Amino acid sequence: MPRDRTYPPEPEPLPLPVQDCHTHAEPGQLPDQGSADDSAVVQLTLDEQVERAARVGISGIVQCGCDLPSARWTAQVAVANPAVLGAIAIHPNDSARLLGADPAGYQSALGEIAELAASGERIRAIGETGLDYYRTLDPAGRAAQVRAFRDHIALAKELGRAMQIHDRDAHRDCIETLERDGAPDRTVFHCFSGDREMAALAAAHGWWLQVGGTVTFKGNDELRAAVAATPLTRLLVETDAPYLTPVPHRGRPNAPYLVPLTVRAIAEVKGLPVEELCAALALNARMVYGDW
Image (tube, rainbow, N blue to C red):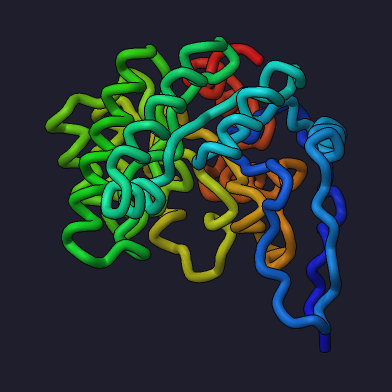
């Protein structure tokens, strides 16, 4: 039987507006649609994503461009659309590849990221940057990622921007790098995947944890325990769309309008009324990214 790859229906609207603090809405962003027998899906345009999101109480998004084409697009749409703020960087995997094959190309790319981030106040974060040891296995590639991470940390601090961290199978080295170099004032772990101990350490440092649809996945009890133990003042919500679609629609394309499913899951984990959680998430988003 073909798998359903269409966008899910809109969920029940939230009682108060919140923001999707990390999404990838640029053209061409859809998960692998599998075999030719699967249901085809056409990606929602940015305007369609923003409109659907607004209908269910998602008042703004942080669009993340983590290569040069998507960073350029992000800088344009953040100016053109009042519901969109931008985050830009060179992704850790791309940084490792460039530093290994074309160090001058990496420096040129990072320079353009810096220029784009400095040129407009709508680019509010450097990210996603960090370490990805899941896809980069060789020691030289990992060392290159650390170098690039340090470059992005320095850039975020120089420009006074927030920083969104991509941390996959690299918790210890991410923490050690931040502690060694000094983290930006507003440091966020995008799609947090650590345990309770790491969450407590992050909160002690004053860092934020962005929670995505993975908090709804059946096997993620440790993540739910980490979220339960994290102070409400240190939590944000995101989609990482078009990936990580929350249950009950896992496997279908994700988009900012599905944030209410994750918000309600977090509220259940925290034992809070949805209204109270929404108010806290919106306040935290303004503290990190400013007003939309």
